[in-house]
Length: 408
Image (cartoon, rainbow, N blue to C red; front, side, top):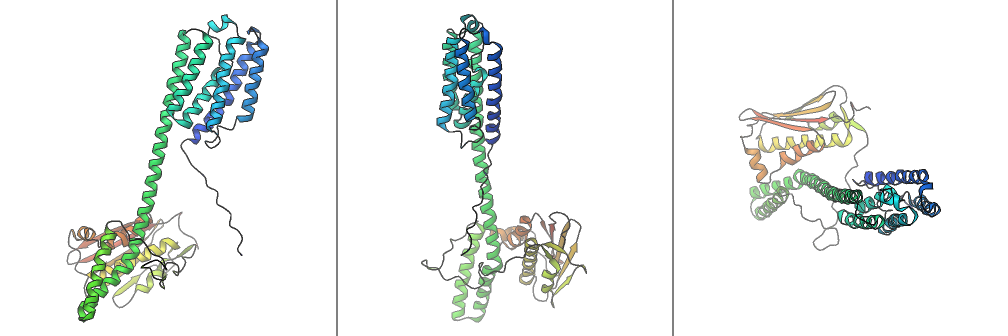
């Protein structure tokens, strides 16, 4: 039996995390401020011992819950309700332990600005609606403690009410933006996967169907019917590829499904780790009609990038064989630059008429768009195609190096 694999740790990134950390610091600092204000004015209270009891309860509550606001999963609705209750109790207790003269003079309540942390917690957790409820309860408690709506009291109440609702609204907008970004990243990942599968289809299935169609038409008889069916399937598959849609894959045992064929993705050779020589991958293309030239020393590139670059070169040579005509020659030139690997594929065919590539993409013939440009785009590189009617075509493929020149 294989040892149980360790479950990977999932790190959840969120735009809220800095707000939660800031709220934790706010609660600790404002508690220190409230304790300092109480200590300085201790002898001015009508019942200082009763006030000290509340400040002790507040300190104990903070000691037990100081880290509850450091992460959203720990800051539950029940905790926020209890936190707000402690703040409201402190405001109302102030009316009993402080003197009327200090209350009328605008002296701070026992929890002072620590109360704002309870309201901000509601704003971050539940948005502007929770913030509105919490700040309204604080406003009512402050008015009850003062006994009359004095100007300073109304000013402070409005400040807490507006600021908490504004922060709650900002948090809601940030959450919506985060969801939109996550959805866009998922769509981008799905699009890249569809393009990768489409390249594989173009490099294999579509070319086989096209060959069967041509050979069937040439042989005639039953082979012609087979070629016609292959042609229909090629058109349907090209339509799916061009529209960014792929038919669902059926596994063995499902209706219409077959066993995994030889040479499938499961049987494909694994790409080795580390840099490999690009020249060794391109040299086998050389033959009677294809010439290869490159540096005398190995041109090293990360294995995955080298494999994609070699596949793009193969796609370019396939286009030469299909479109340049019989007798056309091709030349592959490999260049090793300090910051990039460049491969040029040139032929002496008739060239590509202006606008033909755009027409091919609309018709679902995605050789250049997917098998060549798509591969290079995924590698962070580029594919430049220059074609002059009557003078041939040249494709320049450029792949940047990851972190400087790859080492052996």
